[in-house]
Structure formats: structure tokens, C-alpha cells
Length: 355
Image (cartoon, rainbow, N blue to C red; front, top):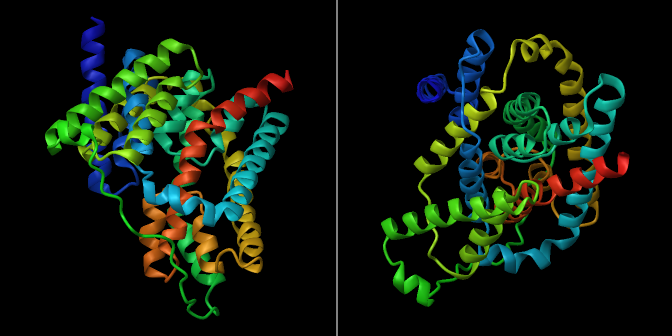
């Protein structure tokens, strides 16, 4: 009987993804599947997904984050160290302020409040929330609204803030790509082999991380191993279809945790959503003013670099507004790695210290 529940849940998830893609919602594989399964779960209680799916999804998510960093990015980090450290410090402080605010004024548990404001991927943070016994559905809703708000509002906000600024002469970072020729590259020498190798390794790392007992270990282990390989070899490859499959599974997992009680509490999320958005707007402005006045970044690039959206989304929008894409990419990629790899550990420490 449970197998039937799982099959029906997956069918709803795929249907939600297809509908979400058709109507143009952001990250349809994650959000569409989550909404479809969440509605089914709240209305019927029929939705079921095995917890082993979480391990697989986290392993694949970690692999995609790890594959976003290259040797070129590593070479460029020293040139961006000052704005990078400032941005990570401000993002951490922002998460702590928001988390404690939600706990004090809205009665949320601290872990849910903290993870709701981590500037990471929707699927990544939602899966981590399940690992850390936070309210995964609340975290997913907060993360979804954050991404949608950033994509809808921040480009206009940045264009308005920089409307009178002249075009800035770029001071480009190192753009040279490194070609690898290691023994692993010679063995895994076709796209199909690289995809199979990366998929198997990411799932194996996810399993090792899960069994290790390290919080969010499945994602963290995969991120570190695949990231290291991607820096030093060309053996890793993962088609976008695999990422979408992982997002559909993640959406199914989060959606299956939705209950009628979850739906009844949605009205209580409005206040935290407003607070979160205001805090991110302030962070964006303060970071950009400091970075531009210190001469680390021009104002336009600083605004994009500190926008809490997806790295690829911000890069595409920034290209239309004349910002420095290479510097934005470095800061956004490291921000994403920090959010998925280190912020959960910071949240655990803060919750432990808070008692």
C-alpha cells in the first residue's frame, strides 16, 4: 500500500513541475512539485515519500553546488577577500537577527527561524531543515517567497539606485580557464561516463554523509568531494535534467510534510516575510555603500553581488545592466557554498548556545 502512496505522490509532483514550468513560476521543479504534493497532503493525507529520498536529493544538490566552483574562482578569491568576508559576516548577522526576531515575536522555534532566512537554494535549505528537525514546510515557503521577491523586485531596485551612475570601467579578474589532464580525466573521458561517475559519487557521498551523523552531512560531503574534484579535474558532469529530478524529489519530500495545521498557520508567516525582506534590502544597501566607498566594487556590481537570489539568475540580470559579472559570480558562488555548507553548522551552534 505504501508503494502506491509513493507512486501517486511522485505523479502529483511531476504534474506540479509541468504545470509550474508552463505558467512560468521560478524553480518549477522544486516549487511546483512542493505545491502539488503539499495540497494533496493537506487535503487527503495520502502523500508519502521515503526518507532515503532525502539522502539522494541532498547528495545531488551538494554535487551541483560543488560543481559551481572552478579553479578560476579559487584563483580569484584572494582578489575579492575583503568584500567576501564583509558579505558573509553581514549575511550571518542578518540570519541571526531574523531568527531571534521570529522566535521572540512570532513564537517560532529558533532553528526554523534561522533556516528560513539563510540565503541558499530552496531545495538545499529545505532538505537541511528536515535534517535538523525544523519546520521544513515553513522554511520552504519562506525561501520560495525570498527568491520570488528578489527576482521580481531587486532588478528594479538596483536600476533605480544606480540610475544616475555612469558606466564603470571594468577591472576584470582572471578569466583564464584551466584545462586538466589527470589520470581520472583520461579514464572518464566521455560526457556519459562523467555523468554516471558524478551521479554515483554524489549519491555515495550522500550516503556516507547521512550515515556519519553529521548534521546535513549528505549535502556537505557531496559538496566537498565533488567541489574538490571539479577544481582539479574535468571528470564531473551533471545534466540539468538530473538537477530537476532531484528538485522534484525534494519538493515531494517537503510537500509530504504539509498538514491541515500547516495551512492554518500560513497567515502567521506574513509578518516574518515582511521583516525578512526589509532586512535583506537593508543588507543589500549597506554592503553596497561600504564596498563602493572602499573601492572594492562599483555600486552596481555590489548591489547585484549581495542580492539574495540565485547566482545564475543574478548574473543574467546583471549582464543587462552593465555590472561586473566575474566579481559578482565569485561572490555569489561562495555565498551559495557558505549558505549550504557552513550556515547549517552555525545554526546548530547558535541553537545549542541559546539552550
